Length: 173
Image 1 (tube, rainbow, N blue to C red):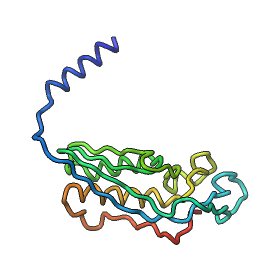
Image 2 (cartoon, helix red, strand yellow):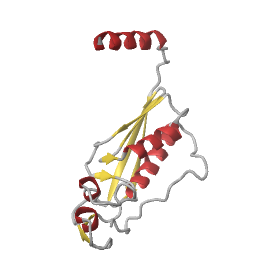
Image 3 (cartoon, rainbow, N blue to C red):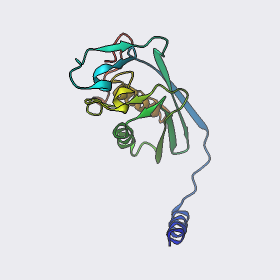
């Protein structure tokens, strides 16, 4: 039954597919400065631990590179870790209409841990604890990924849509 449903979906997709003219590969890259990484004791232990209590981590990346590529109406952008789903959906939502399909390639070119927003890191959890660059870095990477894809499309990003940039001297608490 499942195989029949899958086969029917493939046949429908194939029937609706349209040829796209051959075009070249376009590539763009962007360096994103990262805040100093730290292990937040509040996000790891919870309870009474004050939010400012964090153990700094030395020797980890101070910046990362996002790479985007486009072929025809399909674009990809790399993310150097695991980006919270809501940020990936926000990227795809903003880019709707710019490309036929946009893919995020997480765990690409580096692994810098989890990138979660403030809501997801507000309480003690494994993922919150492993958000080493702090809860604002997901927004900075999202912003950088959007900039890369807009450059691939040779379009200017609409005014007022940019998020704050990560500050290299920021704190990842």
